[in-house]
Image 1: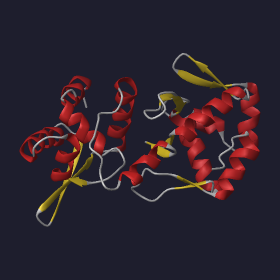
Image 2: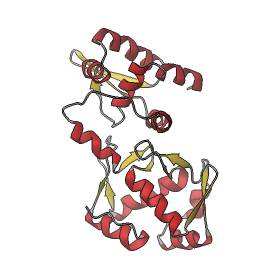
Image 3: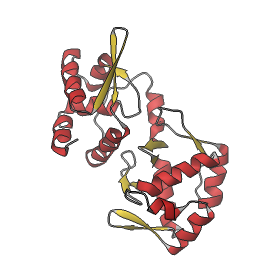
Length: 226
């Protein structure tokens, strides 16, 4: 997916708004996307077709309706990065708005943790001396090497992955960085294995268990009590 094409597709406010309405992982019909973006159904259909052709959206038919969703987790990541710079488009409220807002607390960003929880974790790890932010990436300190080892996170294996080790990923809701890359993915996998967090298949919302609340406090000093 070429960057100029992506920018051109999302440079139209109505398209950006409809794509953003799908950020939670939902599959929505054109009629609802038109309402959310404040355009006519005919206009929405035109823009949706352009985004499907451009690889940003996927569409599937159910009876006489067509449902649209983001084409891949990578598209969601691109959207979040762009919205971190510009701010999310203004959307008309939808009846299930209460199901969308929780994404701000904890969600998956591709394969790592995002939301206010992820930003707080990055802040805490820096404050405790486990990581340092070096320009665009995080680096693990000697304290962090031992800390992650005690947490049973296999840093040598994580470093050998063919991807950025600890990407500085700007969080769209908090406008501040969380930990992405292989380290971010490794942390989220470890949280899942410990039962600290849980997520339904196909859903980006993440729930924190009572075990997780205790674990984040005992291990990182991160207070997640309501």
